[in-house]
Picture 1 (cartoon, rainbow, N blue to C red):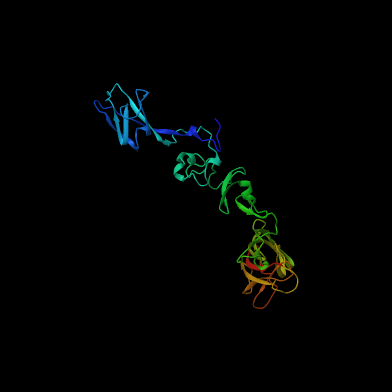
Picture 2 (picture 1 turned 90 degrees about the horizontal axis):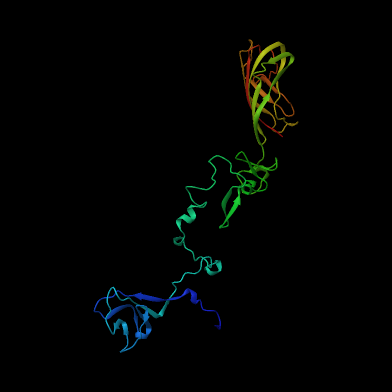
Amino acid sequence: MAYLGNVPAQSFISFERQVFTIVNSQTAYTLSHSVTNENDIRLVVNNVVQEPGSGKAYTASGTTLTLSAALVNGTDEMYCVFLGRAIGTVNAPAGSVGTSQLASDAVTEAKIADGAVESEHLNNNVISGQTALGAEPADTDEFLVSDAGTIKRVDYSYIKGGVDGWSSSSGSLLPASASAGIYLGVNSATASNLLDDYEEGTWEASITCGSGTITLNSSNNLCNYTKIGRMVQLNGSLTVSSVSSPSGDLLINGKPFATSGGEGGFRATGAFGMYSPTNGTPPGLICQIFEGYPPLRIESSGSADRSQADHPQAGTELRFTINYVTP
């Protein structure tokens, strides 16, 4: 039949029913809901609808149902339908409820089965496809991230891409540009606070002198360096294998980072020690770095005597530490 307005959703509604337990020789029964009179219910006995009213099959008032004749337990069956009490007892068809039928924030935590989340990636104990600690995830592994309060799912390839080209290499951050660095101690870009270089390694030293030769042991002529920004630290422990009439300046060559010409803070003085020299080594030897001058120069701090090349002999150890600034 046709309707004005929306079609009633009758397929999801039924009337409430009460089934009675028959008691022999009893004509009065108690209703589960109060009624005005017998016309508010439909009484069915042995699957036959009974006629309501005085002098008929039954009367009802309040919660009292009165039969005109008693029934027999085990033989007769009786139930009533409350005509004024419609209840939604018929389930909606499977798959018929969509997002448009659900109000916003209507599904509460209590209505979500525990197994519904434990079988997914939210389980704290068993995460599908989890990577062992210390191992880098695959590019296709997915992570949950919060973007201004909104949970989003992203691939690891996006995360490791980082910001402004920063990526990950063996678990460490790697900038796309060699000139990129980290600003320390500030919350805005300030050139004087930019750390854009760090390096450490070894360099091979050699010795020259004013005249003659000093030869180092080839298995003990590597020195260490560490460079942080413009500051460089050199450490060395060299062993002389042979000498041939050395005299004059004693110079250590091969430092990995140069200084610029002209005075301006590029000079440096460091500690120096000479073990097992020939006799006559003056006290207080130091190593010096001068601007625009490639080698380290060994001299006496007391007399500014640069002629120290005649002191090393075969087996002499030359040890030094010095810090200097690159341009």
